[in-house]
Image (cartoon, rainbow, N blue to C red; front, side, top):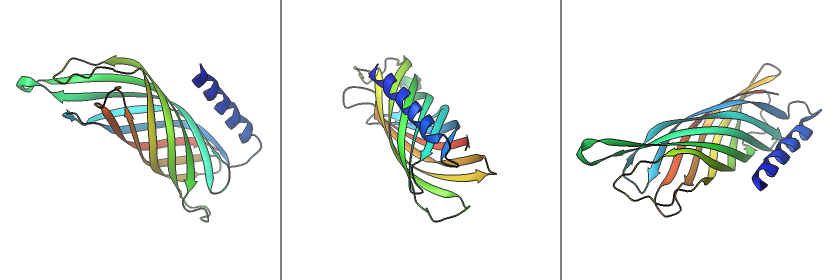
Length: 193
């Protein structure tokens, strides 16, 4: 409940701040093809996907904040006894918030580079965690992600912006020391200013 109130408050805050301020408020769609790893486990990296809607607000020429609603799906693959591979499917809804720092604030009309630091709250909607050799008890249903990344934002005309970059998300989906997840994401966003 508290998370829902926080998310609604952030959306209202972004909406209010964006009114009447040219080129400072952006909203749009995003997609994140990624490669997901599980540390401390003999699991193979797997391709994964997430996508959703986002908004960014530039507080100044140097600092900005953003938020999103994203859906994430990933598989964790593990080689089993006798060469079989088990797959563990997870579907998560995420609510990321972040701060962005403009790394080249004096560039006019050129692509701008941003350092992204943030946090995501996630809820596991579905998990098909199969039994395998390693006992991974304690799968949690609420997930907390850390986020760090670099983005390049390019203006497309007067009203649109294209963003491409890389993010690193990290979390632990089990309440013990096993199952740490690291997600290398390619960020692709199209937004309206």
